[in-house]
Image (cartoon, rainbow, N blue to C red; front, side, top):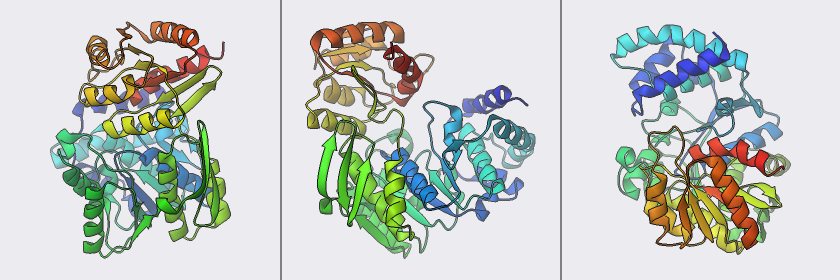
Length: 424
């Protein structure tokens, strides 16, 4: 099997959609000898901030001399982003080899459970197999969706559990209140395992976290964001002191101070040195999360796709007095109006696009109609290239920044195109 054939096979499983539950992944891993049971894991759930938290923790463990696996989703640049060891993507050869190996046992497993293996379940099984095969010292695992019934939740005794910011998202699957969603996220909290979250966590969610940790006899550590000192926020990152550790963060936005505070608490709980924490955080970058892809002209890509993400983006724009020209595309199953209100009201012009090739995408015309309520200059455009041409020209005319946002799918599609466009 070639790498291209492996990707084709993996993506073919996407037709089975999202099906929460642990029966299928458990049966699949049983057939593979339960590689997850041989791994030491750090488990991360939450609505926003999981990716940067996971990546920073991975970099810290690498700086501490540990052979570290990292599992994140979705990918932005390359499918292999999802499975990394010490910052290196899984090789195309290894991905193809393991896909072929696991695909051979899928029919028997499906017959056993009388159900189809989903794409995420297959990738999760491949990840566990790869990390075990490569003898990782530690694996940092980002939950795919929710927590309680997520495929990563087959691990039994994680080294630590981190719960990032909880907000309303995926309400059709996880529930329509913060409490219901928090209960799903807290499903990853295991007995006698330290739990770390932020002191600025949503108050309702924090109560659920506290109650769950208590029931599981698990120590709860709150990262005290109020104790941060010497804070200097810049458009490209920040500097601050937390727990007597001087930190440089190359991730933009005040919310990253909160995320990194929880990261630091986790690392300290695991006995990592202060110098490794400093180096790991400083080495962390993450595509399409308030990512500045060009400083002149000033161009930002952000995958803000829900209300909480839009709040973070809006706060960032306000912090630095930015009023951009915006290219926006969204999924129809999100609260588009709420996101658009926060972003369009802070934009000098908005150009909406269809997220190409995605059946869940909201139409550009509908997005422009919503944006028009908050920004007089809102226009639907046919394709990414046209949007870049028109938005770049408008930004230059208005001496404004350019913002691309609304969906990680859009960010994934347009990021490389935009980077090359502004290199001209």
